[in-house]
Length: 502
Ligand SMILES: *[C@@H]1O[C@H](CO)[C@@H](O)[C@H](O)[C@H]1NC(C)=O
Ligand SMILES: *[C@@H]1O[C@H](CO)[C@@H](O)[C@H](O)[C@H]1NC(C)=O
Image 1 (cartoon, rainbow, N blue to C red):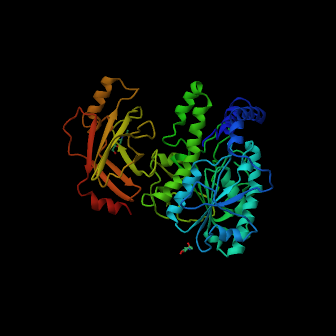
Image 2: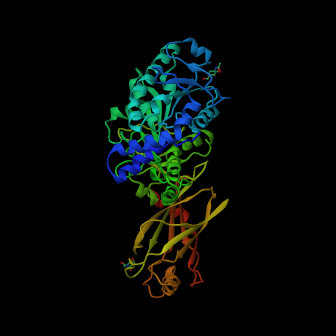
Image 3: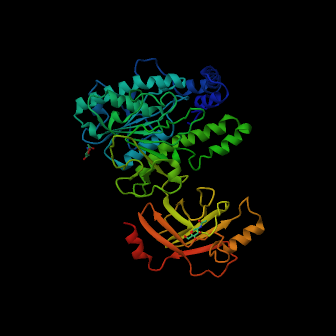
């Protein structure tokens, strides 16, 4: 059912890189839509004109894909007819902008995952397809009206059934996140939670809190940002933090497995289809991360608060003291602070998305200044239940002597307790092969002239276990010609390490 879901957004992006102005975007998207979608639209859905802005379909666990029973505000009998359980949790799943006028396939997956976790829950899909199937700008404007309607619906349900609104959780994707925000701001009492899944950026970025999803809209608002990257000031997902807790998986952009960079190169050959798929992949990743948290509650992704994505990428934010860590998705700790908390995590390319985070702190010492050295370092980790090899250490590109460098390493598997670590000096463009060899000889021990950097210890902090380890160069390595050095747990570091940790 994934039919050109992002055509107009794509065109908005590409149009803005060429000229500023929405008319080109408008024209192109109209012509594309007319060409590709008109036949589909009449084929799949013949909508009667009506004043209904949103419909509320209580889905069944056995039929997560089908609309079998609608709850109609004002008609109390529909609650009973649909088996609404007034003591259970209630979820409202709110879709985003649509070109096809159809539910995307993630909706049924979300419904099924919610029922998987909360057997007795009422999972209601909010159908605002008619209002969402418009030019993006029009659909974006409609979020306010639709949100208001959803708010009235919640007020009515509260009145009719006495459900505590603490048990109501709105989950909105893209434009649907702002619908949830408007809904939350229109209810008489506050709903318990709103989760914004990559809330839409265009038209909402920088807008006043009353004109977008904001922390005021529910007792707790958590947001996942998976496509927050500006192209000339336009980001598909909103970049700014807009909840109590805002999580930016993989920095909030370039999600693993989506390969947008590859798509941008292919675009010349394959047209917009390649780009369309990649954008959708990143934007919709937010949904799948949330579904993952429902289905794989044992393997929750840990998130770390950090001042910037750059610092996180250097492994500097893996400490959990003072509430600095949380989990991603359904089981998030509801931390409410005056200002939004920005959190980061890395993920795998597929479900389950969780990875294990390591900070490596490496101190390079040398007698003389070695700032010109720019080798590529890779590390291999060997643990009690697995190993990972040749992970590149990304960080400052220059290695400065007498300075501690910090790197982030992630492993997809749990390798158990870390036993051994290998560090390798790879080729580097600035080095000739012969000079590389001569440097590598003395790299680890540095005892020839004292002019080459040396590494004696590597300090490691593991985010998932909150453990600190110190690894030492394995006793006087004999093979001087090797590009690789082995590090093992330092003798007697145990006591020192724990003393120094405080
Ligand atoms: C309604 O939900 C509650 C849990 O909140 C559960 O104990 C009860 O069995 C449910 N009732 C029905 C009829 O499913
Ligand atoms: C680095 O530190 C060592 C010992 O602390 C010192 O002997 C050496 O001169 C320093 N090197 C540089 C380049 O500052």
